[in-house]
Image (cartoon, rainbow, N blue to C red; front, side):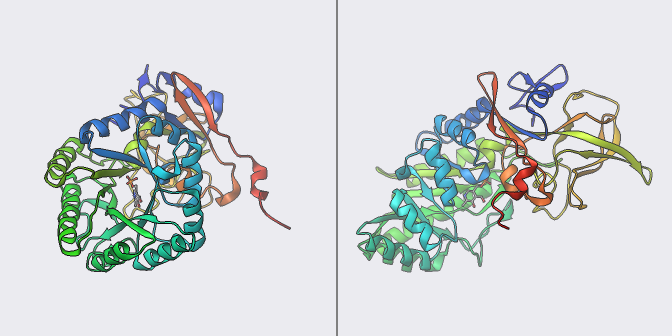
Length: 424
Ligand SMILES: Cc1ncc(COP(=O)(O)O)c(C=O)c1O
């Protein structure tokens, strides 16, 4: 399955028909490669499943690569941003500020001011404090800001590996505080209350749990509209659909989620209402691969070791950052996909920390210096999720394969980058 979006040829991993070995030879390693066709297919699949009433937003945080974001925009995804940097990426990718939605619990006054000045469409407000602040800033500018309230529902999103809600949370406004926030937004001349937002967590593998969470938001929305004399014309139901990134991970049942969501939308739909889901990993992860070469192999304590030129500073999630129980990522020998002979080998990167390890005694085809290994489903939370300045190795390059042609979309770093922006 993990290979499905990329492909293979003669037992060699390929991205849209171009062998990983050729990509590595041309662009060097460590290297991220993304498939434009796969990105577009992911958007098309989600849009087809959820239907025309539901808009699909790309969560830029998952991969702020400009070419990736441009591709996803061209494929029909809207976008949500969580920083001014992501605003820059979105604008450079061709989004208009007006169509963007700005979430995140720690937007500073200065960031909100810049976002207002840029004309960002809707602010997903995460606290009463932030709402008050947006009201004051918009008022001072003589503007009206469109806001949607991010709701922290009392029940956590079951089935999500990393949950961002529940009884108490840094994210979103507790459900019992929403009426006060909605009244403030309703009554303040500088605010226009557009809707509600919920996002309960990432790596959710339980389609029913996702739909249940969305249902809780819709039910609350109906109650608050009735009790508070407000309208929520925009309902962002979140996302966080799971993608296998570690051995043994399940698949997210998109069709099941879509059936549940379609039924829910039909119950709560009306003229002028807009529906959203916001997805990062689900759109991008399967469209990307991380390639690294074996630099050294050796034997210690009776175990085999391979040291790669890429590590946790480039692919932190694959090395288990943020997980409690470490499991190997979807690691394959890129040129020996069908090898039957396997021997256990411990694989890690070049950093001087035991944390820089991808797999412990993983059965792989016999590995030698110079061999190319690949981590699959690596198109999200890759380079920019990783501590790539740690140990001052140059940053890996990134390549997009589009219409059968690979092109460099992020230059490889160089050792001198370690001095960049430092002052004596
Ligand atoms: C508010 C919000 N929306 C969307 C996302 C994207 O989540 P995922 O990549 O799991 O789809 C995140 C991830 O943390 C988030 O915090």
